[in-house]
Length: 291
Image 1 (cartoon, rainbow, N blue to C red):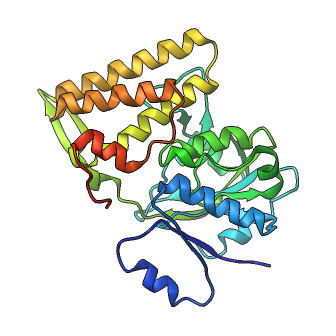
Image 2: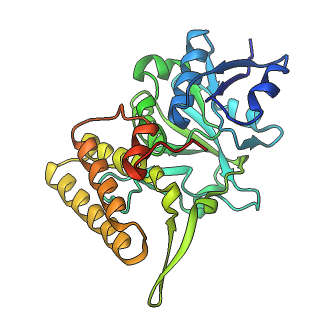
């Protein structure tokens, strides 16, 4: 039986009131555990209900008509997951939602590499990585590899889960099938200049997001990258890169550098159970209301 499960991470607007009036949705309300916690609960719930295939979304994702029909034909028992391609509202392809992972060449807090354009003409592609935007997951894969890591909160949780999905079977991309992602990332960014160089940086009030980017990335390197010498070289290079950007472009330099160091130390000590409130308290000195 088909079912739509909505995970409400304690929305502070009128979302819950709207959800209560819907007759065709199964709604679970929980504390704000980030996108990672939402995907964890959604996949766990669908798995426990016995669903054979679990189609994951985000709150700002909208598949085209026929997208599910277009990808489910490739959903075979030995396949971990199948997914459509991801585009924004301007019909531009979002290249970092689907791709490959090269653990020998990491850079600037990104593990995934985009797919070459010429390959997008193929009917179906084997890929290493898919974000949770529109990925259709085989319950048999979930049985073998478990659930997403809810403690990631946000950022890189999809990379970590993709690495595990590949242990069960292939992840397939159907390039002609499309899902729209309506996220507006630049609302958190500000344009900074140092002489003639320009960098788009997180506003200080949004810099808390980078804690999860940094920590989860360093944790992934420490967990999956080999040999150990390569881990050390990659981490040092990324620490230097972000430190330089902070010093050249940002305000509140000491606070930002301190958060970067904390993210590194927490990753190395496998401390993933630090919640959003603690991070905001650490960065801003008091608890800010979640937005």
